[in-house]
Image (cartoon, rainbow, N blue to C red; front, side, top):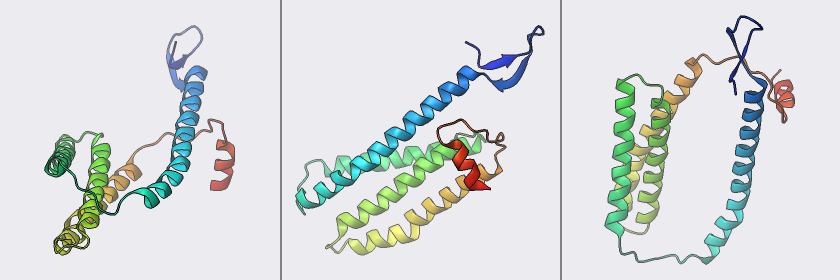
Length: 169
């Protein structure tokens, strides 16, 4: 089960992906895109249902546990991003993206859960001054890292790639 093709007789690899590998990539790509499409479409009616059925207020028992746990996860994401960055590891892009997503979630929940209380002003200030700008900074850094990456030339894998390539011209 080779990942690359070999020259006939010499046994040296050419570096070109095998037909088997390309087919596996096509199948995984198609399955991933189908899953994301179905999930996105399915989330629309679910969100509408929640809008009409959830109570506007809800008393929780583990409020402290939920927020401390979330903030611990945010600390872990930030620390992972810092460690990977100091080590110049390319996985820093994944950690930075996760950290940015958690920061945006933190800002959203801090502000939306504080609406109608005096705490909304502090929550909004932290969101505007700290959380959202840091998330945007991280996303911009990840995008700049991706733009500097050396990508192999894009070759069509099928499943509509030909149309996508024509649209880029």
